[in-house]
Length: 318
Image 1 (cartoon, rainbow, N blue to C red):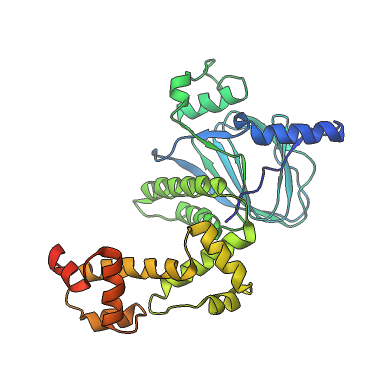
Image 2: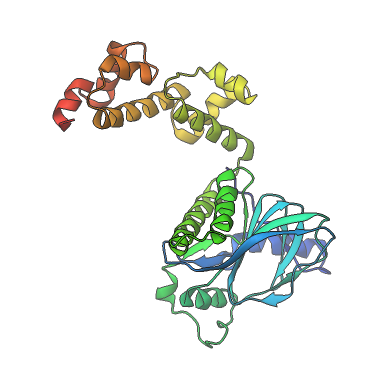
């Protein structure tokens, strides 16, 4: 996963030097973001896919709902107040309720994107209006500072190229909007909160697109194939990277070697397996998680947890 600087440019017609300065200020100023609350009940009014065969400008409007845009294919230049956001494939833009947004030029041909319209909490309207120095539409008042502290700060533009799960959640929300399930509203609220959490984690990760993406794929492979111990060479060849580079990145991101990372994952899986499958013999357990035999498993398990697998089962009553 990765999180670049927001592509914030100053309004058209300013000098190049002033453009760069405003872009830098916008990146560093937390007031340029979006204030949202996590784990609150949510109502999604609509969500869908849109394709513009011909180049089209973004609507000029002030919405009473939060507008989440995910660019599937193409580019779009969208203004919010006097700030320009340049969206490209797999970028996500949050346009909060109460702020003026409009197009700056036309989209690329065959532009395809997804949107989710979310009813804001009253305090979100106040907070996001206060961010721009205004008042929420229809309220005429600002949010007190103590209440504003309860919000989570989101970047307006979040780059999701290295995190396919964000796109998948977006698609799942749209699919759920078309569902006739009696639990639809509850599921949509949960899915949106998952999306917000995923976006928050995405934006807070240091920018290193290629390496983080490869590390996530490698760690997912390790987690989904617990019966196999991978060498650095095997993983490097699978993901077309240098073995030394992969090893260094594991050490940098996870604080441990590739071997230690795999071992920790497997031992934690074994620990949970011992509790959930008390009748499976230790020899079979060792095979299931890629250990040479039950003796190899017992030694490494005791080294990490201080007791043997058999003793652990006895202590926990498994």
